[in-house]
Image (cartoon, rainbow, N blue to C red; front, side, top):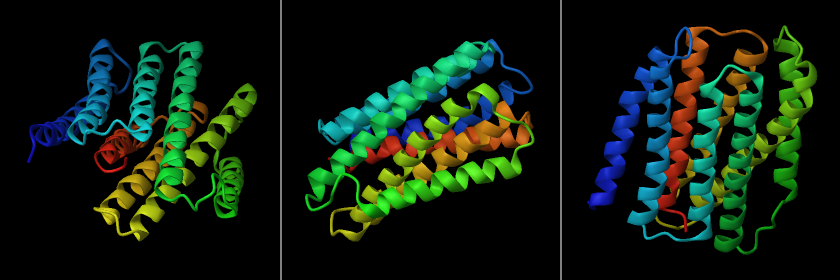
Length: 241
């Protein structure tokens, strides 16, 4: 096993250690300690992506876009935690939105490069995006007790981009899984589960920030799924060129 792969495994283990420490430190309110721990966790998933890129000698556009997406999320983490003011929250969301755009672009480009017969958006992807967005809208209305108010349009835009990222990740993952490429099943799971965890994490964030359901259990689910998603997606750089 190469030194870089060992480093990736060590960083994944470090993430497993630091995420619970961060979860504990940020409850019941954010502190300087929780900010430091959060940025350690965020720096680890960026470092995993960069190290995977070096180990695989992967300078493909996919790898570059994925690392940029990870860095955008790093800044999103910073702004969401650094201040309780709403402006910082929305700046953080913009960084995450940008990160999802880079992730979705990476998946789209990888599909076209590896499976030339595939279209940028086929009817199954369009149908899946529309169905999931409609399901999300009606599900939110039935389960949330507070209205989004002025945040409704930004949240809807964010949800559309997030769902597009998820569908694109699954599209690439399924195509890869059905191919005879090396580690096909592992890559399929990395992409589909990673993107799925991102959807779970951001869905819980809506209830925490807009529906005032800020419980320790829900916050823990939000953070565990989020950092798990980032680690899995960053690790995909080891395999996808």
